[in-house]
Structures are given as C-alpha cells and as structure tokens.
Length: 355
Image 1: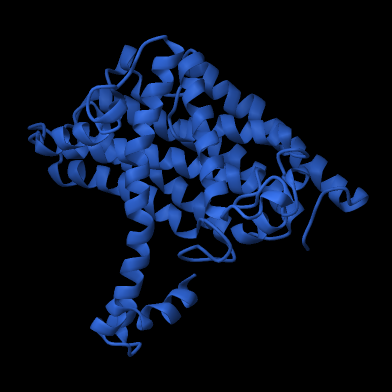
Image 2 (image 1 turned 30 degrees about the vertical axis):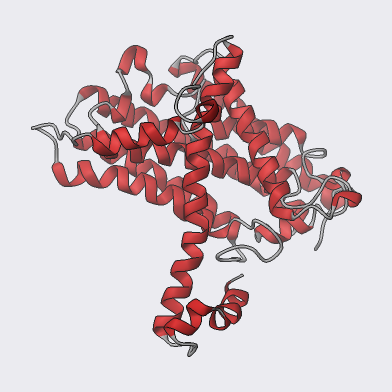
C-alpha cells in the first residue's frame, strides 16, 4: 500500500501542490495522509460502535436505547463526545499530574497504532510487516502500562486496585492468546497477516474457524478478558471499585480511555476476522465482485456483535474464577492444542497451508 500510494500521490492535485519530487517533505505528507485515511474512519467507527453497543443491550432488555439525538439516535455518541470535550478536566490534588494526564494518551495512542498492520484488502495496509501478528501482540501487551499508570497516578485506593487487577488479568490471558496464534501460524506458515488471509482464500470451507474452532473459542474469551469486557470487567467493576482505574478521570481524559477501549474491541474483532474468518475474502467465489474491505467490515461487525451479546447475557465473574479460568483451564488447553495441531500438520498434513 505504501509503494502504491507513493506512486499515486505525485499525480494528484495535492501532490502537484506540494511538489512531485519525492523529497522528505513529500514522504512526510504522504505518510500523514495514509495515517489519517485509517485513523479518521476508525474514530467515526468507534462512535457508531458505542451507539450499536447500546442499541444491542437495549434490544436484549426490551427497551429503546438512544433514539432522540439525530435520526434513530445515530448522533448520540457525537453528542456525548461533545459534552465530554466541553467539560473541565479535574485533576485530584494528590495525583501525579504529569503521569495522570499521560496515561489516557498512552492507552488511546496504542489502540490506534495497532491498526497500522491490519490489511483491509489486498495490498491495503499502512505497513505490511512480515511479523505483523507479533507487532499486534506486542502493541496490545503495552496497553496495560496506560492502565497501571492511571491507577498509580490517581493516588486512589480504588483506582490502584483496579490497575493491579487489570495488570494480572491482561498478562494471564495474553499467554493463552499467544499459544492460539501459534496454532494459526503453524497452518499458515507465515507471520504476515496478509499471508494468513491468503491461506484461507477460496471459500468458507478454507477458513480457519472450521479446523480451529476450539482455539477460536479460547481466543474469543481471552479477547474479552484482554479488553476488560464483561464478564471480565473486574478492573472497572462498579460494584466494589466504583469505576476502577478510571474512577478519578473526567472530561476528555476519560473519553480517551473510552475511545481506546472500543478501538481495542474493534481491533480484536479485526484480528479474529483475519485469523479465523478469511479476512477480506468472500465466503463463496460468486460473491467476489463485492470489494474485500466490505467483507472485512461485515466480519468485524459480526465480531463486535458477539462482544455486545456477551455483555448483555453473561454475569460477571469473581476475581478468583477469572484467574482460575486463565491459568488452570485456558493455559493447559491452549498448550494441548498447540501440540495437537502441530502433530496433525507434521504427521498428517491435513491442515491448509501456503508454505
């Protein structure tokens, strides 16, 4: 995508305005435009994601949900964002002001940075890294630092307890996610996300959710814990910790945490679509005329619908149940499936592979 963009950009009026010579300024503007082409639609998608999240809960609970601001309530998220933007940012007197303000910025920035390697279609990625899946895993692992910093800097017992819970929870379930990724990588023979998608080309029968259905379930549940979504939202459990690590935040500082959380949910939905549902590929060859990014959008929407339905139906775990599930159930299961699928691939050759 980067090379194609650099070839296209000088021929446009914008490229002619800045000069068609490929200087440092040219590359700077080209990279900024590519980043904005991903970030702006993502922020708009996050706003509508919050709306659909609330609508899904309302439907389950047999109520209307947002329906006043804009047609069908579609502008409710933008109104909420404007309200937060106009509010004053209150910093507790005993807080470490610098770290208190940096923490939500880190959480929000890391949530956006991860999208750099997500392929939206054939050749449509800001950076098509050969180790793309490791990049996503590494960036998502860094997300815990923003939460820990916010809990510590708030100088509040509730916030600090929520931050400690989140650190333990995210580390616990990242181990299982890592082993799940190993199973997919064995079959695809590549760490490149585009190669993993291409390994599932053809039809829905080639998608990895069929042979890897058990580890898809493990990945989905671990993604719920990784993003602090119910039933694993113990770091911000309002019943005992008021609002957890973000209890002292208001205005845009709180909004950055909120946007980062939903951007991470969409990221996990995108990763699930790429690893298990064929990415931008259509389920049947006769539907190939539909652009690939539309198929990826549909699959991301399906993944988010699953996230929302779990929040609507499943009660919250106790913390000891959460840790038991991560270390005593998912870790042994994911280790077993790594050995199991590796044995099938090496000795049976039954799994699809492009290597």
